[in-house]
Image (cartoon, rainbow, N blue to C red; front, side, top):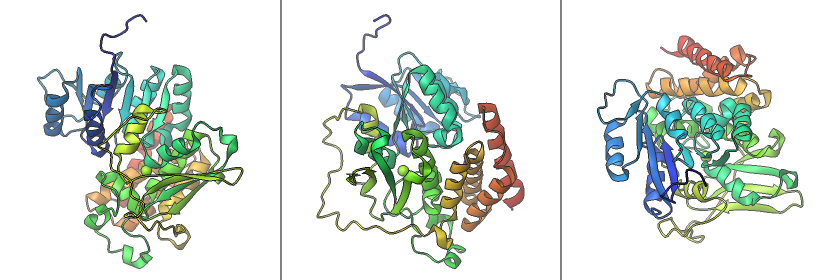
Amino acid sequence: VIGKRLDERVGVAILGSTGSVGTATLRVLARHRDRFRVVALTAYGNEALLREQVAVERPAFVGIVSDGVTCDDGWQTGTDCLIAAATRDDVDIVVNAVVGAAGLRATIAALRCGKRVALANKESLVVGGKLVLAARDEGGGEIVPVDSEHSAILQCLHGRPVSEVRRVILTASGGPFRGWEQGRLDTVTVEDALRHPTWQMGRKISIDSATLANKALEVIEAHYLFGLPYDAIDVVVHPQSLVHSFVEFVDGSVIAQIGAPSMELPILYALTHPERLLDEGMPRFNPVAMSPMTYEAVAEGQGEFPALGLGVAAGRMGGAAPAVFNAANEQAVALFLDRRISFVQIADAIRSALDALADRMGDTLEDLFATDAAARRYVRERFAS
Ligand code: MG
């Protein structure tokens, strides 16, 4: 092969290396140095942790997105560092663990270059689903989900065509406010909302899990990843987060994927799919200790989790609507974390932005980014106090 590298190990770029998924990826890779090598790392702004990671991994490329970091180490700065890292010749797999719509361009660029994208940035598919799939088909790249629910579905499908699937059932922990009355949610603090019962995650996704906006993003993600109609994607609350999703086949058989709630498992699978690699460091499953496993209907009809219904409706609407949903949610969550809006106002902001902007054009990347900016502006102007 022309240009074949001397080092036969699989080259990995991690976009968002200092976040929750990024650091979990580095822990997984540290157990498999014979198979993988880290060739590129990028972070948003956590320069201190990035510097520590660089000292250990010695990647060929380092990028930091946030302005205001002055680097004399040859690091690339600014948002373009994501694309530079994702498209390098020595990169085989791009772990996209960027938070939010900011990850979309890098996903598209990597797929156009024929890379495998281990996708933790679900917003890439939510905002630009059609464009992402087109980039994959053009460039010969591959999307393997890191999201635990979608990794579960991929593993349950085991290569079977979607025509054999009756429906998938995504599991949701229900977040810290499962079973709360609407009135009680008015008093929720940032600290309450960040206290996720089963998963250790970053701030943005922890809030999304509390509102169930995360599950709406995941329904849209499943629609694009597996080519499933929205009627064939259900959600059930499973507070223990041990079953990561179910696939119900047309013959009535149901296959579930089960494991401890650790992101290391879907990360490793995204790196090795369809193979499996011996990993003694992975948390083990103990059915007795992990009993019982229970399930509940989602209470979205009772007004507890309106963000789920709003997001799925946006997904069904298509066009720019999912981008409006995502951007309004990102902006509202940022305002909530800054203590400038209340928890229940997150869904209010999403609903209002969708009413105003959901029928915008969404055919091109430029349309989608313009819509993204408009939705953020809309939420800031009407809701920020
Ligand atoms: Mg998930």
